[in-house]
Image (cartoon, rainbow, N blue to C red; front, side, top):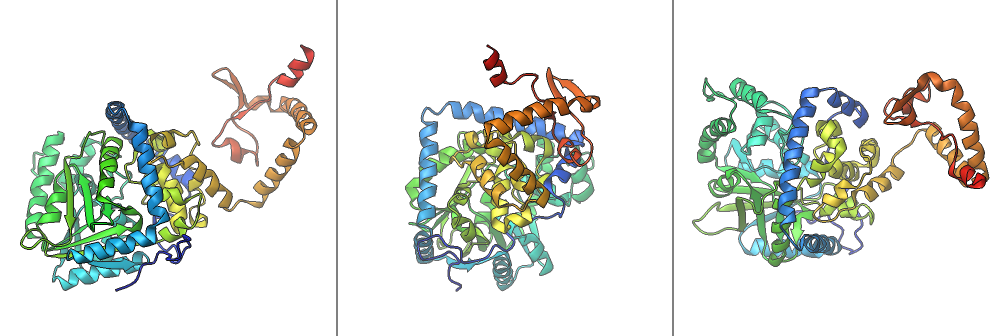
Length: 491
C-alpha cells in the first residue's frame, strides 16, 4: 500500500508535486474563451435563466435559518481544523475504514489514482463501471483512463449523462449541463441514446423518464461502481454522498465492488460534524432544506451492499495548496457551487471559458494552485473582485483575497511591470499625482474622437495601439474637469 502523499511533519509542507489536478483542457486563455461565450446569445440566455432560478431558491431557504452565519462560522472552523491536522486525520480515517472492512489506497497524483482504479476494475473481472457524479474523477480524467484500458464508464447523474452523450465537458460544478436548454437536451437524447422514444418531447418529466429507462439496465448489470464522496469521517471511516436523483443510491448499493475516489481534503474529524455541513450544503447548492438522498457507508456490511469496498485517497497537488497559508482555505470548498451562481462573470461566460474542471470563482483559485499559477495565469483575473462569492460561500472562503494573492504570483509582461513601477512612483507623491492629473486633462483633448457618454460618465471606449489592449475589454474613465483638492482650495 502506498503511503500518504501529505506531509507528516505537521508544517503543511508540500510533498507531492502538482500533476494534473484541475487540468486545463484548452491552451486558450480565459479572456479569449470568455469572449466567444459572451457572443453566444443562446448560451447567455440559458446561463442567466438557470443561475437566477438557483439564486432565488437558495435565498429563500437560507433566510429561513436564524443561525445561518453561525453555521458558516462553524463550517469554516471545522475545515480549518482539518487543514491543521490533515496528516493525523488521514491516518485515523485509514485505520477506521480498514477496521470496518474497506481497503484504503493512497494516490500521489492523477496517474496513480487512475492506475489503481483500472487495476481494481480488472481484478473484479468487469468491462464497464457505473459512476456517481464526482468532481474528483473528472479532475484525474478517470473516464479517459478507463476508456484507454478498454473499460466503459457510464455516468448516471442526469446532467452528467447529458454531457457524456453530447461528447461535451461539464460547465458547472453542481449542474454540469447548465449550458443546455430542454430542446437541446431532447436533440442529444434522440441522436445519441439508442433506446430513446421516437416521439420524445422536451418536457422535463419526459426527458427524465427516458434517462431513467436508459440507465436502469446499467444499474442492474454493473459489477463495479465508482463514486466520489462529499465527506469522509475520520473517526468512523464513513463516506458520505449527497444527491438528488437516486442514481447514487443505486450505484452505492447494487454492484459487488465499490471504488470511491476521494480528495484528501474531504475529511471531517467526527461524525457529529456532519450536523453542520448537512445544513450548509443542500441550501447552498440546490436551494433545498435537505438532500433527497444522503447515503453513508462504513466499510463492508455482510450480505448488504458491496462486499468489496475500496477508498482511493488522492493528493494530486493538494499538499502544495496546503503549504500556502493564504491559498490554503481553497481546500475548505464543499463543492456547493454557490459562488458560481452569484458570480457576474460566470453568469455571462459560463464554465467552459475557464478551461478547467473547476469553473467559476472557486476554480479561479483552486485550479491555479493545483497545477501551478503559470499554467493557469489568466484564471486569477477571471473576476471583478466584487466579493459576491465570499458573501455566498457557506464556509467563508475569502475568494477575492486569494485571487489577489495569486495575481501577485502570475507571470507579467515586462511592459506591464514597467508601467506599474512608474504608476507606483507617481502615486507615492501627492505633488506628482496632481501634476499627472493635470497633464491627463490636457492630453485627453486630442482623443475626443474616442470620447463617448455612457450613463452620464465620460469614458474612452477605444484607444490607439498599444493602449487598445486595455480598452478592448474595459472603458477608460476620462479625468474629471476638477479634482476634489482643486475644488477644496477654491472653496
